Length: 463
Image (cartoon, rainbow, N blue to C red; front, side, top):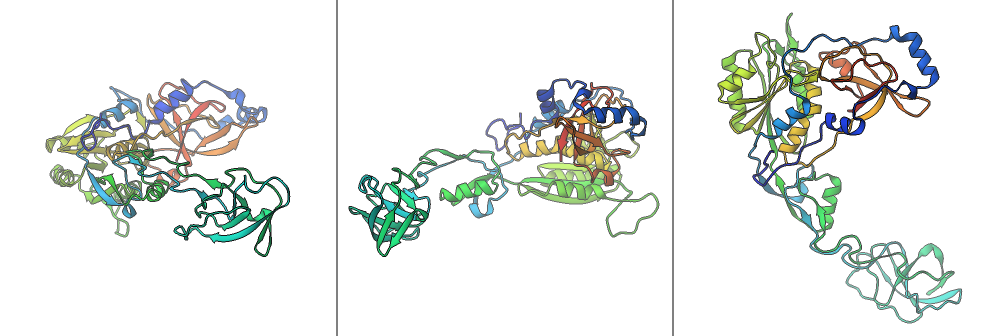
């Protein structure tokens, strides 16, 4: 397993959808009975009208299952170290230490609301109760001490310390004032509306676990404990470059045979995280010498190098040879995922290498399903489950790829039994970026599922 900062095995960045889907469903079974009778009849009458995704390839040779590809990726070792950072600059970063409470929280007994501090035993049981008002305590006046006397009350505001002798706070709405006399219409319970010292956290309690994301909640917890600095994993340095002599940048003129480089901007969006330091190297031509120069430059300054294009079997697909030509190694090629079969994992020097296909849909899919979890683990983050939940197909699909298939889809509501229905977007293929932008999630079909008909159970990976 991956060692981060040289201190033992890292947890998997997230459980893959394959594992979660299997854990929830085992092998999904047909379940058209979960559809309402009306919907079953509609499907029976209109199956020919449903647009069916096509299957363009048939597998040959050995493919690496998605989970095995992730496991091999996690074995790559990255030299990610830690750094001490002022808390105000820690937002969105990855915690490299376990934060513990150095003092109890709350630090003192205080009032949970605006009201009047009283001593329950002192006021007796006869109603109404009349007490003399002897003082006022606000949250900011913590150094001023007022001791409760017999048959007296103290005006107290939310967050103010409980004065000596008081053991309850009665809400201001429940009393009547007559000058400096407070009239109670009921007897409060001992401890009412008082938050006690240490009732939330005791000294030594764990506040935030190591490998946690410093999200707004964690930032607030650390600040409430008075922690000024935290030890964080250094930002993961990720270098990206696109391959393809046909690629042009938005705003440039294009000629026939040229296309705009959308993959660069997909990756920039996916990698826009506070715990990532992005190094964008632009675009390289499909020339091995040029590609090797790009690769050496990227690997020299990054922890992870991600490329798009050049990992398939075409005449201009050079990336595997480029990695080897830079004294690197290839750990994974040909993954059992659709789209994204050419996904490649390896290492160049101390940098991990991730080669993504050139099709934009495959770039997005493989990143969400495989790459995101690897980056999280390499950055030091603890395990996160990406759930694939069971839903009911409202489409027909007849392609058998021998791969885990991720089809862009949309939720279509619920059947009469309350089960969610999903449909795939029409004319799906990995290059139709516009259609992918309309997707609400991926319909997940396992390699051994077979044909899908309306009413069958499939997986749903929300985006």
